[in-house]
Image (cartoon, rainbow, N blue to C red; front, side):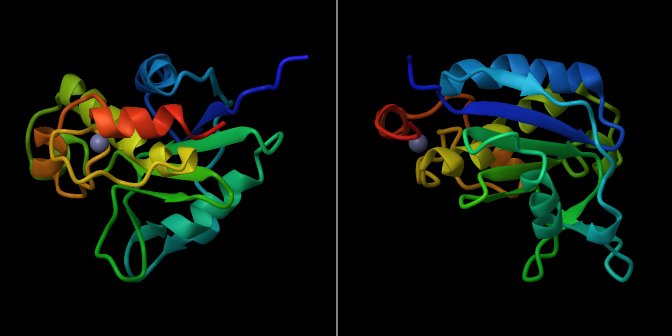
Length: 181
Ligand SMILES: [Zn+2]
């Protein structure tokens, strides 16, 4: 019997545009050469909400996401509209945990409306796609990249996210083909 490869599972948390989630699922699979499932959505965990900050704590969300794993081969990516944070950061776009192999990406600052600009679905998809790949990469043992053109370039600022490309650089591609088995 063939050894089963890790599968990526997308989990919408709360109300998330299903067309966007679907498009992400279709595009994320090929870049990691993995199949992608979309799980029926779950609620944004209430206990992740910090009343003082008005944001949701990313680590609590990752914890919750770990519990939806059907087996150890599943890599989970949660998507939500809410703003998320880590204690030492004013905000984060996403976060990952390599031990539980879970990741989360927030669309809050990815949306143009956050900057008082008109909606732009194309931009939202491209940004969400780049950051989904960026936050899934550590789960495939791929450290963040120093090449500002690489999709795996470390980026939290929208300018850096918009400036980087939509593909792995050669170095990341080589590392990826030797990891994440
Ligand atoms: Zn790279």
